[in-house]
Length: 209
Image (cartoon, rainbow, N blue to C red; front, side, top):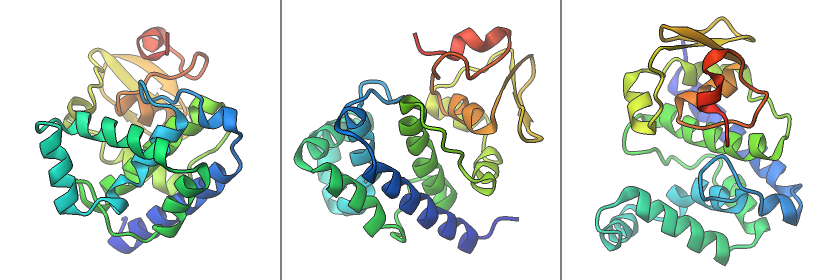
């Protein structure tokens, strides 16, 4: 069973590892489109540290400016901060805040781990980098996949069963869609993946055009 201490340690490790990865990216890679629609790698990296850099009063003010639109707010801040920060700063924000206690409004520290892991995959999968998220982190997030997760991230799995080919895990009922556990986690979080990563008849629904 995962404990809060284990999850916090996993969050810190994930942030440090991603910061190290960002340090090695080329300028072209920083400007590559990520799996987050409309964001390059640099916008994703900027968004990942937003919770560390904007205290709650500032966040509420920014939300007010966005007329209550959470997605409008996060998009505007990601673009603004990506333009204002150097790539070295974007990496340092993660490394320097490895133990920051920020959590999303719902889901606690496991949701914070999910935020880091999923956005890290938004970067590495888009760049074709062969980074495997440690199994304990993936399993912790797979355990949270449910109807609410799918609804929040806009993942339509009607008639589809996700079936990992590297772990003993499946979710849903219907025609099997197979792939690595971390790729299926991306599907559950509403992402479309590059061709060749998913297998099964429903695969075309979840592939980037």
